[in-house]
Image (cartoon, rainbow, N blue to C red; front, side, top):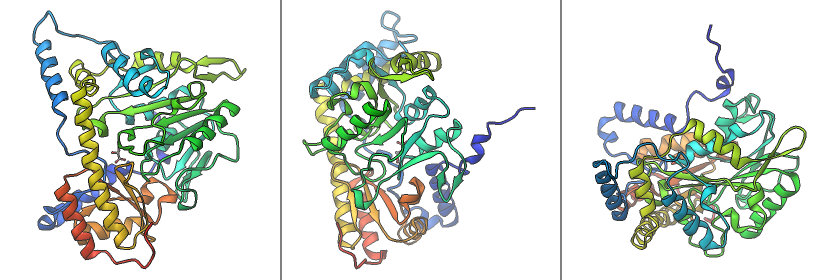
Length: 416
Ligand code: MLT
């Protein structure tokens, strides 16, 4: 008899974005005429084409694959040196963060990296997870048996870090000891950012408690405020207590092309039950080389092209484009009286509706044919909120906002 991993039974029936896709499909099937009008501002999926520098690099690499002299078979699982070096120099050393190429592991996405990293930790590790949160962090810990069952939208044995209007959507340090902490800035879903001082407090906490911070910086390309830290390694001591995740999905339009990376500094430690320290770099390298065979050569060449002068200019153009959408969304919702956060250093706008967020999702789909993400899908603190994504064409965002102005009830509250 095949016995199942019963931890899966604790999960909600389907993953948040699969659930939304299913509901949208059902709406389109039942209302073909209205279905054709649907504008998606739900999942953060990019719509702009790949930057020309990446396309040129892809073409060139494909041509190299066509002749034996330059053909590539299996590459290094950790990624080609040309990409790891470009990452270390441009994304870290240029900002004073001492990251070396061998601390970078190239992968096919931050979703997989943030999902897989928890394999390194003991099943009884105490995890701290923000609420609201990107659901992959929590769901993968549920699958691994690190939580109890869910009650009122919260799993037992998880320390939830509430992110609310009162704390500016930056969680306070936990009151009880924790071992593994998930942080994401610029934040998905709220779009909030963290200051250097706030991040320093988290690093100090992790150093003091011998905890580990999993820092998801997938949206760093949208930061415009020069005072804000781009990498956790800009903070002293972080090399000992933090793993960072980066992705080209939103930075360079790679959601369908797939390329990302994870940084595991060699000084970053985990401990056995006797308190002996082990470099997480070594453990991750063991996992990565066993379970992953590398990102394809042409895709890594395309990613490396982002670091050329032309590439840098082009990817900046992409994030500028989506930030213009974000500004329009924020302006529109604020003018309707809905308090908003995000959208300034982030492609997501977190909107306080004060009503059931799935009901608001239905209202927007049925009345305006605009797809958003209900805040409750990101955790209990997301109830009463929705997330609007700026990833779409400007003309479609304009159209979506015009529809919302017609159908949304104007709120009396003062917009933030
Ligand atoms: C989101 O909409 O939260 C993201 O696009 C999901 C992801 O990156 O997997």
